[in-house]
Amino acid sequence: MASRAAPLRPAPPAKNGLRSIRWRRHLIGYLFISPWIAGFALFTAFPMIYSLFLSFTKYDLLGPPEFVGFSNFERMVSDHLFLTALGNTAFYTLLAVPIQLLLALIMALLLNQKLRGINVFRTALYLPTVTPTVAFVVLFVYMYNPEFGIFNAILGWFGIPKLGWLTDPNLAKPAFIIMSLWHVGGQMVIFLAGLQAVPETLVEAASIDGAGKFRRFWHVTVPMISPVIFFNLVLGIIGSFQVFASAYIATNGGPKHATLFYVLWMYRHAFENFRMGYAATLGWVLLGVILLFTLIQFAVSRRWVYYEGEGA
Amino acid sequence: MQRLARISFQASDDSTTQRTLFAYVRTALGQTFGYSALLLVAVISLLPLLWMISTSLKAFGREFLFPPQWIPNPVVFGNYITAFETSNLARYFGNTLMIAVLATLGTVISSSLVAFGFARLEFFGKRVLFIILLSTLMLPGIVTLVPTFVLFKTLGWIDTPLPLIVPWWFGGGAFGGAFFVFLIRQFMLQLPRELDEAALVDGASYFRIYWRIMLPLSKPALAASAIFSFIHHWNDFLNPLIFLNSEEWRTLALYLRFFLYTEAGGGAGLTRWNLMMAASVVMLVPVLVIFFSAQRYFIRGVALTGIAGR
Image (cartoon, rainbow over all chains, first blue to last red):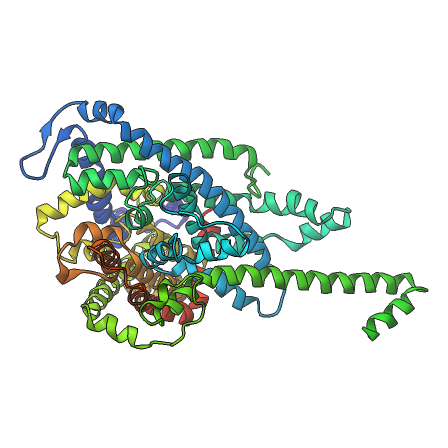
């Protein structure tokens, strides 16, 4: 820390003067970051603590919160929809995120070629990602329509009969996963930047040593971009666990609770039935689940993520 | 073809040329494969958007045909006029624009102040505070949904745009906002320190250095933040859904969902998909304009945070 670096400087004659100058510098630092400190306290720290408090209460926004001990947690465990919602979300996340990352990586590899006009392709592949979620979901509701949807029309070319994408409980979650694949532009660009940071000398060296294309990719490129893969994986899982808008708009949790994702379920308790205490409990439990997944990934990452310069 | 034949003829008696021919064919094949793969992915990628535009131009009834009519015939531009005439689309557009612009303004101003503090100034506990800031990036925002609702309800802000704007004037203190501080800080760290040190010697205040030196030089990062922020707020659905409920403050995202549920679910009426898609295109246009006019900042911005994130 630079505050320790002060003795390196020639000491000014008056000790008091030095102290006041140093204090002033710290004060100015705090002044600049004060919006964040205030914002963090008001909109992050306070809500989290307040939410923890609410999770031990019964609160319908009309009367004051009423302390109920652990009964919200007990209620959650015996709620048959808890496992449904959590299971749906975990299923969606664990399937969607790896497919998304694989697709994003393939697209990044395609865009990493030295070809003329590559910028046009980059735009084309990124464009769907900036489309407003609601517009996109509504569009997919139309495209998934069993009677006149474009998906069934394309399947028809191959002689496949019409599918009830959003009405068949077995197909609804896969339909959401497919829909999510049009929003992987962010991951794609991050992969692309990672690929472009791989030193060419390394790849060339491997090539001189006789490594083929696939081995160069697997043994040089993948380890070099492993931090980027890890970054995308961690944030992708955190984001997917909070999937909400698509299910709320397209299916409202149906058919037969097949797309009742955790946040949608929590939303219903909070904003349709005004069970604020219970919803706060559900929020904290989701935070715990996500934290657990994140910690596991950080622990496992030591085995496969390679940081250049580490331990050297 | 002739050229190829000539090369192959020459190649028969010269191993170097043979290798050149081999490389030539391989490059040509590789490029053809590269282009075809890209083309395929690009077509699939753009298909939904093209379908959205195509549907928005169809005459009523044509959007229910099966097999679908790929290119609208007749082309009905009037759907856009109908979409505006049969609803308060213009008002929803204005609401969304106002919220997105004010939130973005707050984000850029306050995040750049905080970013300057973390990039250039020294103070007690800086490292710990920065780690806290970074860790909020990984916290799921959902956990504060209920308590912030209670907070804003207590303040009497429900059904006003304030909950969607005010938190963004607090330098990334709101959930997800730390991203912008991080992005701008990473950029400022790359700027040469000699500049502000020289200004300090000349007696400039820190605020002057921030305002006159760092801000103008950080324009790419500020632009990237502004674009991300605008698109985020323009597209946002969950927060407007929770904090706004009257028609007066309805945003485009809320309207599209409302449209789907009223016209589709209500009675025997069929969803007017052509009007729905016209409204969707209206919502998409500002995003596209910004995306195309500032693409270089956009993609560099994603890359900057992604790489720095490791």
